[in-house]
Length: 141
Image 1 (cartoon, rainbow, N blue to C red):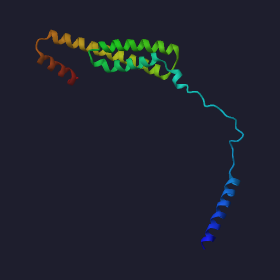
Image 2: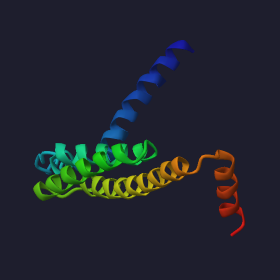
Image 3: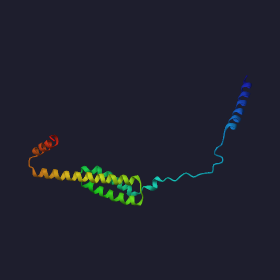
Image 4: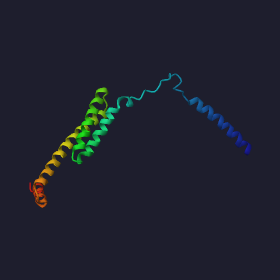
C-alpha cells in the first residue's frame, strides 16, 4: 500500500509539472526593457515656493498677534511665492501665494481692529462703559 502511494505521488508530480508548463504563456518574452519614467514631482517645486507657503501659513496663524507679524510674514511669503512661481509653476507656489494674500488681509484687519480698540480704551476712562457699549453694538443690531 505504501509503495503504491509513492508511485501515485511521483505520477501526480510529473503530470502537474507538464500540465502547468503547457498552460503557461510567457507574454513578457518579446517585450524590450523600458526604464521607468522619471519623477517630475520634485523638479517642479523650488525652495522659494516652499518658503512662501511656510510664510503664508505662519502669517495666517500670526494674525491674532496684533497683526504686525502677520503683515511682515505675509509680505515675505508673497515675495518668495512670486519669485518662485516665475522660476517654475507648481501647486505649492500657488498655495503659498494664496496663503500669503489671506494672511495679509487678516493681518490688516486685525491691525485696524487692535488700533481701534486701543484708541477707544485709551480715550474712555471707564472700562465698564466700554464693555456695555460693545455688548450693545454686537447684540442690539
